[in-house]
Length: 312
Image (tube, rainbow, N blue to C red; front, side, top):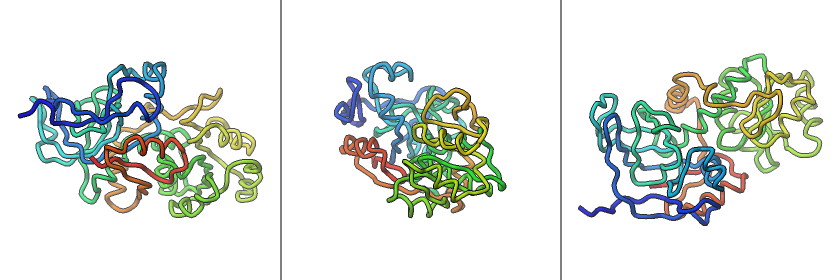
């Protein structure tokens, strides 16, 4: 057997898409408490390129060179380490493993977390691998944001960046609990937002007046998935700080959405909703591994409606 028969996107320096290279690497071996997954699809998230954009940011996330790229994955278990009883060879799985999933194989700690060792979940029947590879980071992030503002059927919630990778989950999860959703986006995203169940409003100058006209009885909660404009608008519209959250900035008085807000079993519930056709994940684009730079450039433009995946 050749020593180098696996491929992975690797970085020898931090920076933009130009530092991403597809390399041959040794096939990893599952240790005790681990599984090896033959990756079929890897989902991209803005955090992937943000983490590796410069050395200071990478250090904050615990990354050092050389390192891999990508955090979401879906695939098939092809090796099981000692002590693992939850998974067997041939099982379909999905999950997250920090900055190393755009690769032929990924090693995952069965009892780990996305940030420490990776995690794995059984892929339900009815969920294809391409969709499964989009669920972990964006689904958990959306779930965390909703946990902060806790929307219900009496709420009208303003979601900024509603058509992005996290927004497609946040909008639908809020609608599933009965909330009315007004989603911000560009003029060209209106149809995509309506398809998710949101009422579209264009961002930019005059947005507060446009939202006020759409919801004369007021906005009761807000989630900002892009910058600070939605938070500022929500405050101007009278939303109390405790019902505003963000994943995009640090603002005094606003509770950011984080992994600590995610309820146990949230990702399994999201997968169940997909499997039962209650939640849909629009795939904006897919690329082969060799085109990873083009994929990241597209996502960095921040005008994609839905998720981007890498076909492994």
